[in-house]
Amino acid sequence: MFSLFERLLKPTAIPERAEPPPDFGAFFWHFARQAKGLFAALFAAGLLVALLDSTIPVFMGRIVTLITASPPDELFAKFWPHLLGMALVLLIARPFALATQNLIANQAISANVSNRIRWQNHWYVVRQSWAFFQNDFAGRIANRVMQTGPAIRETLVAMLTGVWYIMVYGTTALILLAAADPVLALPVALWFVAPSWALRMFLPPATNPAVKAKIPAQLIHAVRVILLTKHLQGFPCTRIQTQQRWPCNVDSGAGPEPEMIFRGMRRRSKSKRATEDL
Image (cartoon, rainbow, N blue to C red):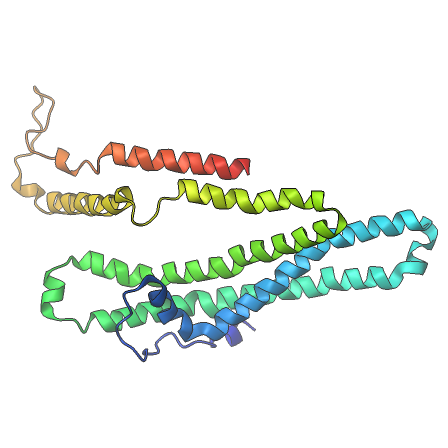
């Protein structure tokens, strides 16, 4: 069973277009379309799981109605088809849908999509000119080659499992509650609006100067530490016991500005508190 899903995508396939497009959406689609069948299957499995989960509160309400509508000794005799249908949905259909979703996400997509993106990035990078490697750090190039694949895969899988599940489950709950009483649908509607507002308030856009300045600061810090470690023997860094200090300039590798880190942590604390309250 596992090997069947693990062989659905070849991780070393060469793309039709070697160079990924620079646009953000086109960059994601460049890799996602190579496994669009798997992502479509994950999309369908997520839809089925969300719909089956939304039947659980419906079944609970139905059972309460059946118990109040008939004596306990006649419950199974009168309504056994209803109870059997609920059992089939909860004990067979729902576990089957969850297992299918996990097999697609973990066996078919997780390793194969990540490794295919890594392979194609490596295939494209190694064909660059000699000047390309001279003008950048080897570690940074290798880091992008290795981490781009898992980042794209995690984003797509999270959208098709987490976000899609919340949208389907929440919409179904909203419709069911509104059909019973429109007032009952108000908390669900607020539950939809409030997280969107929190994301709008606390997640900085990519064009924010603070976000754009954070990455260069981290890179400069990493370069300083590397250079300091590499050339440490060339510095007169013997500690002077009487002065209790280092005479060489090792403080340059202390890290990015603390205020920048504090601002990011403050925003994270506020956003976490807002999401916990919601």
